[in-house]
Image (cartoon, rainbow, N blue to C red; front, side, top):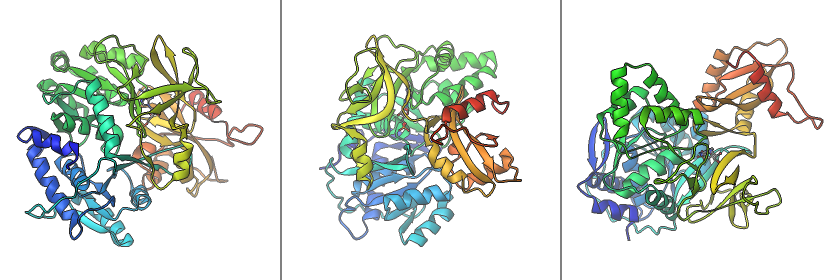
Length: 500
Ligand code: AMP
C-alpha cells in the first residue's frame, strides 16, 4: 500500500502542486521525480528501513521531490537548515546518524566535506536521476517519517521524531479545521526545517491537492507583489513576517497600498502562529488587509493544538480552542487539573503527538506525564478560550518564530577567548517577539565590539541564535545560591541604552 499522501497525489495527477521561479510542477511531476529519487536512494536495497537521509536544498520543487523520495524509499527525512553554519549542520547529521546526505550544489563544499569525513553516501541534486522507476517498498504509516531538531532547556537541540501517522493526524486536523480544498493556493515563505513550513503549509497543501507557490527566500516586496497579483487564497506566517509586511506597506505609495489591500481581500484566510501575536500587530494588519488574523498555537512535538475558529468569533490575545483530534488540559505544579480561570501548564494528547526524541529515551520519558505531553507553556482558559501566558523556562527564547535555547548559546559564547562568563536572555521586542541578548563578563583587560563578536558567532551559530544586543558587565546578577537571575539580566537590557 502507498502512503495516503501519495495516493491522494495520484488523484490530483494533472493539477499544479508547486510553483517556483523555475516554473509550475504538477502532482504527476512530483510523483514521477520523487519515485526516481526513491529509486536512486534505494540503489541495491529494497527498503531504506528508516535510514536517516539528511538533505539541504533551498525552498523549491527539488526540496519537495527529495522529501517525498526519501519517504517513498522508506527513509526518515532529516531536513537541514540553509542558514546553519558547519558546526550545527554537523551536529544534526551526526546526532541523527544520517547514512546519506543529499545536497543542492550551493551547499556542495560544506556537505561533501562532512560526508567524506563521516564516510556517508553523498548525492547532489544536480546528478541525473535514473530514468526508470524501480519497485518501491510498501510503507506502513506507523513508521518513522521525519526528524526535526528543536531546542530545549537542556543541552543541544533534540530530534523530534514523527511517524507518517503523526504527520497525517497533524495535517488532517488542520485541513479539517481550516477547510483546505484543492482550490486553495498558498504562498510558502517559511523555513523548511521547521514544523510551520513543513506541516502547516507544505504538507497541508499537498494533502489537500492544493497549489503551493514557493519563494526561494522571504522578501517583503516579493510577497506583496504576489498578494497584489490576487491569485492566493491562503497565507500563513509568524508575527515577525507580518511586522515586516506592515513596515513595507507603510513606506509605499497610496495607490500601491490600495492594491495591496485589494489583494488581501481576495484571500479567504490569513494565519499567524509559532509565537505570540501582539495585539497592535493584529490590529494594524486588520486595518491594512481587512483580515482579523487567525492565531493558533502549536509546537514541533505536537503539531498544532489550539486555534481560533475559521468561522465565528476570534479574540485578539487568545489562541482559541482545541483543534480536531487534540486533547488539551491545564495542570498545576503538582499535576492536578486547574479550574477555568486558573493558569496551568498546557498538556497535550492525541494522534499528532510525536513518537520520541531521537535516541533519547530519558528526555522522551521526562516530557510526558501519564501519557500527556508537557509543553512547558502556561495558559489560562477564559470564556472557553485559551490565552498563552508564557513559558515555564526563561531559557527558551522565541525570536522571529524560532525557538532557541539560551543555554545552548551560552555554551558557545563561553568558548570565545575574550568572554569569561555570560548570560543569554530573551528581551521583549515589537518586531522579533523576543530579541536574543547577551550580558558578557569579559576576561581582564579585554574589549569586545558587537560587530566583531557577531562575525565570530556566525561561524558557530545559526544567524537567528546570535545575540543582537550585548552588554558588557562587571559581574552577572546572582541569587543567594549563586544562580544567575535571568529576570534581572532582562531588566539590565531594558534599562540600558543598548536597548532602543
Ligand atoms: P516550535 O516547536 O519551534 O514551533 O515552538 C513551539 C513554541 O512556540 C511553543 O511551545 C510556544 O512557546 C510558542 N508558540 C507557538 N505558537 C504560539 C502562540 N500563538 N502564542 C504564543 N506562543 C506560541
